[in-house]
Length: 257
Image (cartoon, rainbow, N blue to C red; front, side, top):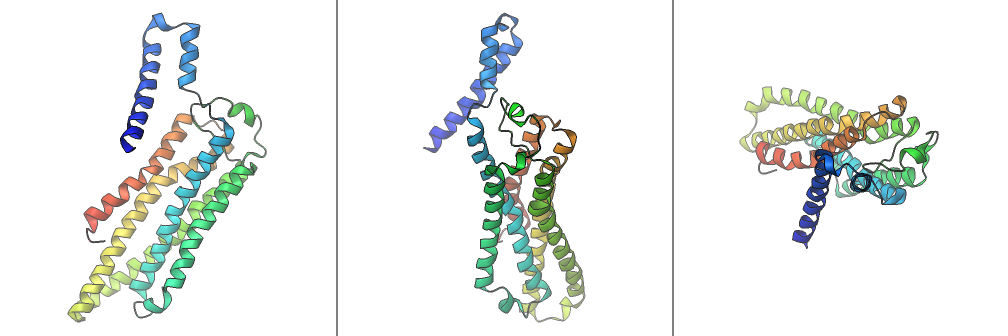
């Protein structure tokens, strides 16, 4: 099944790419018929509903990433800054509530905003803008572009930056006293610091990968949606690239994480 899907994707991408290059390069193919074929291989024909489903899942699976990183930052905060209270603060019941929050908020935000079409209120000529595009265009108006940035990126991102700033300050204090600790406690503290360092790198890479995408969503309605669709798609793919980076970070910075 995997081989079939991989083969289908390969044929889809390179087959359509071959058509585009052939028609663009060879003048003998510059006819009305071939231009219609070119349009067919570069146009979104699955309809707005399918596009909304696709975009909803993008949001639902993308936004939880930063929520989970925020939750892990809270966990490391108690482990390093308040180690004696860690077992009483970070209990299984609290972890379950954090997991529920990480999934429920993005789902509500993604499906309600997209399928209610609140994101399109006030966008003039929206039907024309999405009638035929080279991708799946769901454009957020000024209100929801700002809301998405604040709720899905800026607020949890600020929480993580604040938490890791506090962890860094506490870690420096620990470094001065670490030589006076028993060996077992010394090793545990070093392990916690290494985990915090790794997660800090994960957070930095996440912010680097996703900030351009969220910033474009915020800025685009103020520029009358003049951002090229190719650029918007590239920024979204760059955000997805974050999921490729995390395993590499864990592998090279903390193999036993």
